[in-house]
Length: 147
Ligand code: DQA
Image (cartoon, rainbow, N blue to C red; front, side, top):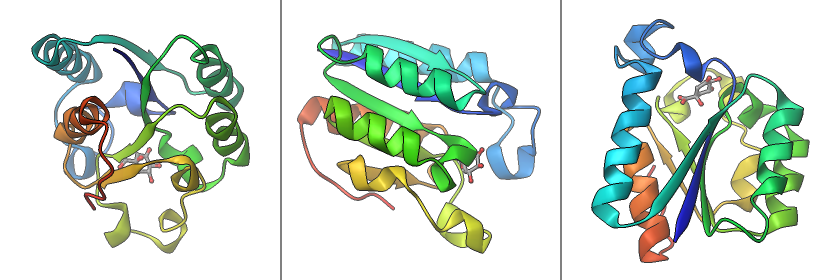
């Protein structure tokens, strides 16, 4: 099994950006945690981050026929991007949406998720452990809502 983990804009600034909301862990530490968890699960993992919407769409398209499950934190594009939703629908690969913070307890504009309609589950507010939980869901092939 091969999992693709996609992170959207500003997530490369983890550990620096708003640590009270997103925690003190750096982006490279998150990548190390994801790789270690993939090893434990016995799956292959690719990790991708971009600040650009079109690059995220390209990466989702490139998963077609190659990747068995996607973990995506589209970051701010969660709340705006029909293009990312359409790309996820186009490839039809089981996808779990992750948010480090509890978006349901934040500003009104964060209550809308365009991508959610293309996801089998959403994990929000579990910090970076949410990425590992999302990988577990994909490996189990399950359908869970972990808000
Ligand atoms: C986020 C929540 C989004 O609202 C925000 O724009 C982000 C990160 C999260 O992981 O909690 O950049 O997706």
